[in-house]
Amino acid sequence: MALQRTIPLALLSMALTHIAEAHEFSSQMKEKKYPEVERAVNARLLTDPDNLDALVVKTKLIMIEGKDTRLDEAARLAEQCIAAHPQSSECQEALGNVLGTKATRGGIMSALGYAGKIRDAFKKAVELDPNNYKARSSLLQYYLQAPAIVGGGKGKAQALITDTAKLSPAAASLFQATLDLSEDKTTQAEAMILTANPGGSETVAEMQRNLLVNVGYSYLQEKKYTDSERVFLTISQRYPANPAGSYGMGKSLQEQGKQKDAIPYFEKAIVLEANAYTYYSMAQCLQVTNDKVKAISAYEKALAISPHMRKKMLSDAQDQLTLLKR
Image (cartoon, rainbow, N blue to C red; front, side):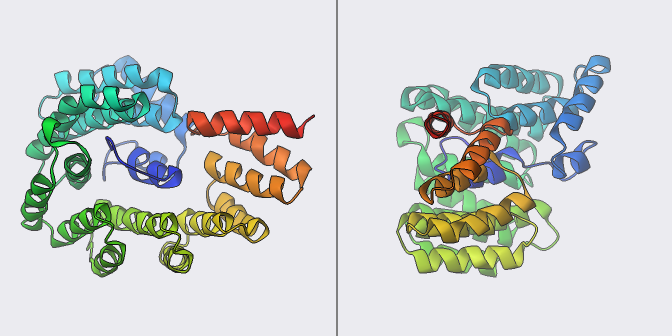
């Protein structure tokens, strides 16, 4: 989402791997078979250049890959999707997500330059499909983080929450928790997230999980390590197939200087889902504990795997690898 303050793993979970609840590439995307999906999407676009599902999914694949050099391509695909399917909420949401990513990667001036287009894309997505809760969530984040001069503001966020309650009390509760988190009311947000009942909505359930992850990181940023570990343990228990709980537990221990204790949690997270950020964090711990061979291997895997890390971490991983190989 545009302008969103996130932790790397949470960002990958929230923004990049969201899939609409039903389209022809859904099952492969959920299984993260990205090369296979890209081949199928490219083949579909060769025969049907304006295929809605293929255009939306290809924008997602580009963002998942994480290369800044392909964001302009993703934006063009989203705009093509809108031109071919002007009544599609998904096309508008895709454009908002791509421009949001471009904005956050480009710095404050870039963010301000894209702000209006980002806001309008998410507003249009919600207008076209009021039940597109992912677009609603992105619009909420925009209101919470953008300055008033470009249409942000907590009053607008609260109005959106009130409107959402008419459609889904659970989604509205999660949106209120998002507002609470933005005001550093972490304990209050946690309670609201845990009591929300998504019912049969896969998207709302995904939002609940990811917000709980953000609560864990909020406690971690506040150096409330006991609370962060309690939340990450809850995540592991509620969502045993998801790596976020194990990764978060590892990060909490790492932040406390308990690198040796953190390593098994990163290893468990990797078993659940190989991720560049997890390999990078584990490599840091292995480096501190003087396990040079394993640290080199972990850094190499972090650099080789896709989605790629952000530039700063990517550069540091390359530097540390060079240092270790001397």
